[in-house]
Amino acid sequence: MAMTGGTGGGGLKSEINVTPLVDVVLVLLIIFMVVTPMLQRGKDVQLPRATATAQEDAARDPLVISVTARRELFLESEALGEDALEVALRAELTRQPGRKVLLKGDTALDFQDVRRVLRVARRAGARGVALGVEEIKR
Image (tube, rainbow, N blue to C red; front, side, top):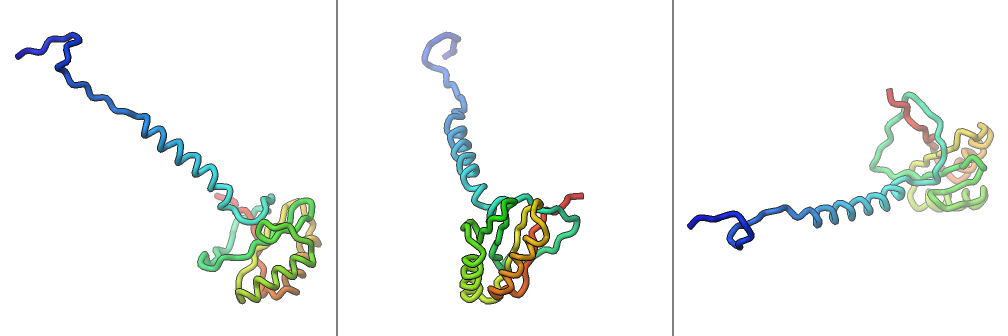
């Protein structure tokens, strides 16, 4: 039996249907676009740059204090005044003693602004405060 070209119904045609693949890729893209901004903790500030940084223990999750260029204080993503920051920080450090504190200060701040927040953290019971910097890649 010979097959001839034409529109006769005997030949099998195999084509890859890429529509499901495109659907899956688009869903994954949307998921990554939604989740990625949530990975950064604290408020978005312009960090100072440093060539050498100390690698912290990743097992201990630090409390993040952010100070924006407009001198607004945030504990994680919650805006607080100076007194409320001290109370909230004290409560967290009482609940989890020895928890690390990370201070992210904008580059537009004066040292006195950063020092004021360091004093608040010290009064709240923080034993040490790490300063957040952006590492310069060589």
